[in-house]
Each structure stands twice: as structure tokens, then as C-alpha cells.
Image 1 (cartoon, one colour):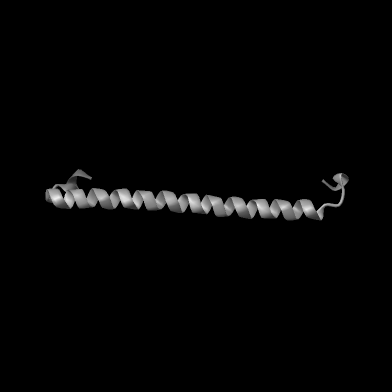
Image 2 (cartoon, rainbow, N blue to C red; image 1 turned 90 degrees about the vertical axis):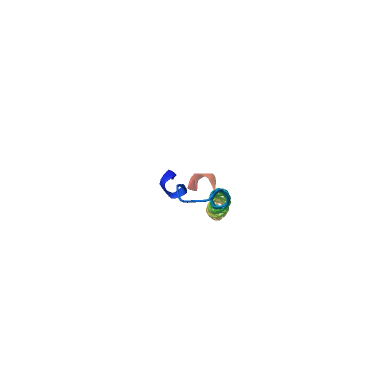
Length: 59
């Protein structure tokens, strides 16, 4: 984003870089949380299915 940074002072550039870093970190945390929630849900579904099966023949 050179055109955006062109009008920034050094302090503004520093602040903008910190903002981008924080946004990136927050995005990574959100992605990990979403994966974790999805994994837990899938595991619960598999357990429910497996508990519902009475014998190996039903698999």
C-alpha cells in the first residue's frame, strides 16, 4: 500500500503497521477458534452416530 502510506507521517506509518499486525493476529485467533468449534461439533456428531449403532454389521 505505498500510495496509502505516502501521505503518512512516520508516527502514522508506525500506528498503521501496528493496526495491521493486530488485525492479522485477531484474524488468526478467530480462524483457530472457528476450526476448534467445527472440530468439536464434528466429533460430537461422530460419537452420536457411533453410539447409535448397535452392531458392527450396521456400520
